[in-house]
Image 1 (cartoon, helix red, strand yellow):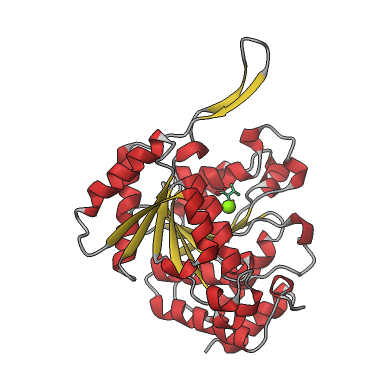
Image 2 (image 1 turned 180 degrees about the vertical axis):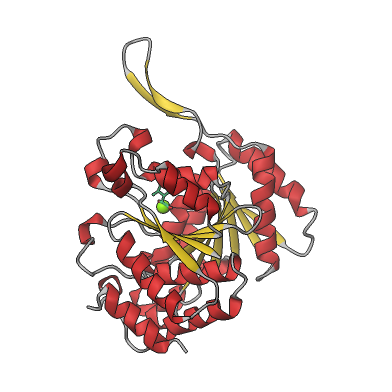
Length: 348
Ligand code: IPM
Ligand code: MG
């Protein structure tokens, strides 16, 4: 089994290194690793954020463990050369259309949540975010209007096949959990969302056991902080899912805690923390590696069929937190390495 390690920019390499140490400690037979540059780091080395050799490695690999991309040095580059294009390119080239973002509060972190503990402890949900379409991948540009003004545009669209396949992932995820699915859209305003809602309802006929509800995205943002416990699985488009998953992370304690899996139709996946490259703290040892360590656990579970090992990592993270391991985002002073050490000590 080949694992591609793509650390990327900012804190990405630091957090991936800690996840690698945890994977190594499990002594899994037949796992081997190859590294490659991606994002701003790749641009600086070779002139492109997703060089052909990195894309090739990602295609050859059985799974990809990804850090983060984003580098302020690259802000003035043309869009197709910016670091973010690397992760968008990987998602698209590898057909990674289904993004699973579980948000659960480790009880030890109730005081780290932005919400009151009695509200925060209720959160235990998965956001299923579509990752290959929407306004992210539509036609975009800046044009000049008839009266000579600059006008930016990004086309939002979803076709029914795109909605159907992510809806199925939503329903399947719900079937494996609490059998509740909330589809989030903006059907009161957007045609894209009305089609989304119609197709989700069509797909629901195949899942009579799942209780389906629909929510407008503005209300969903409000409900997520009012009563996050009401959600089991949420399915939504690329843009809404991007925003709501950052919000859910703060309900769950810290954006440094949320892992994700981006899957194709055959359980090949890219695994990454949902936080970004955090250039302001890069290289200072202040990053929380737990989201990446938990992403490695998801990788073992979904792409390598090693759920026992995945459980072991998750249990070790819980024990490390119970033992008082706290990086700065969690109100403590543990470095990324200290956090990795704390998890390693609890891994049996
Ligand atoms: C995420 C990130 C990315 C996104 C960026 C880095 C392009 O915010 O994975 O949530 O918008 O999808
Ligand atoms: Mg995001």
